Image (cartoon, rainbow, N blue to C red; front, top):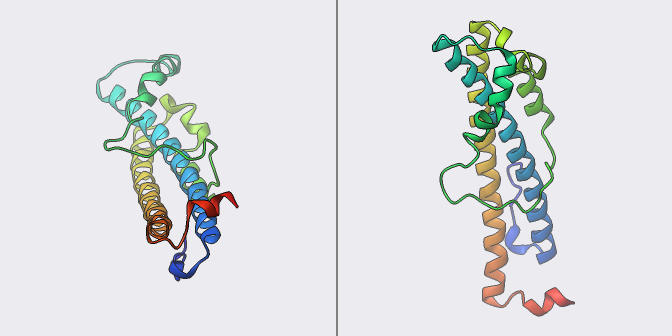
Length: 168
């Protein structure tokens, strides 16, 4: 969704608008999937921090038993949300995936009860920042999707495109 991605969209053929809308949908689906992974890791890190602050002595097995409630805590964001157009994870940005692994690698997450306090706190901070960045990227892609959809709708409203053209 580089700058200029929408430049000149008013003159694009309808097929180009739809194609770019489909491309943006794939990108959004990938970002959505990645954001949920980031949020899941963050939820686990925060649950471990809360456990330590409360002075509770739990094992990794206890944490695993709590995963369904930990991971379901932030499943529904406020607002109306959007229904996914695609169910697959879409394309995932390699740089963002590397940052996710740098923030809290799977291997450390699998043994989170053994991670030191400072490392756990630092991982939480990095995951919060990454979640904000991925969410911001998603909002940008939503803006692109909205603009593309608005142009498609405008064409139908003005008669530049017709429902009959879909059938041919």
